[in-house]
Length: 100
Image (cartoon, rainbow, N blue to C red):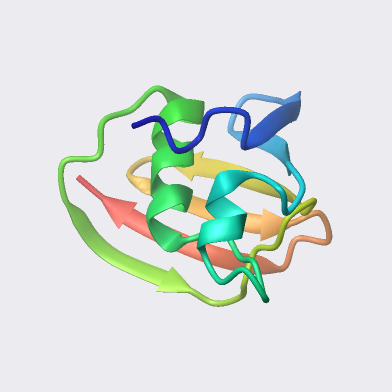
């Protein structure tokens, strides 16, 4: 099942980072993951990173989820070697994924 289908739109891309805009709370993921308080599940942050950077994460060495991601949020995925950092537009760190 493709959970990320129509979940986000790429709004900007440069060498190391990609900015996306999440869809609204009507998306099936948000209506299933806490209908009264919809947030983006951690596993989908990883799936989106794989799609955006065209990588295959075989093993997660360390993951930090520091803030929630809500429908309609604009977030930035950055890749530095085997690390994905997700931030807000204001550069506040949301998540960090270290992988093999």
